[in-house]
Length: 83
Image (cartoon, rainbow, N blue to C red; front, side):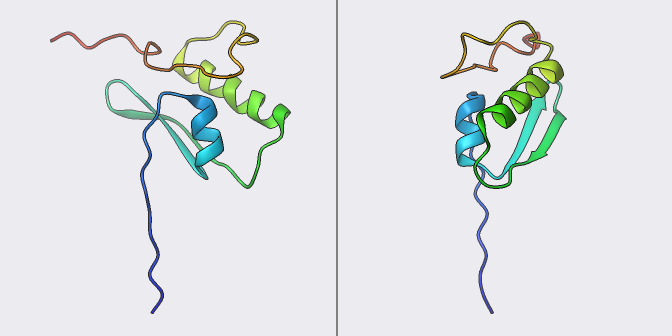
């Protein structure tokens, strides 16, 4: 019997998630999945930008992301939950 392994990698960087993962989940507050995407192989620049735009739409960040080629931080995408 062959063993299979699954690893969960958590990041706030969309670029890092698209480079490392093959399955992407965007988790929103309060604890719900806002977007689920399968990443098949290496994405082209156009595919990465399309996925980045979908993530921004889901997280309501929106706006022009032309200046965010290296890192786009999602930590500010959802409002803080009151303590």
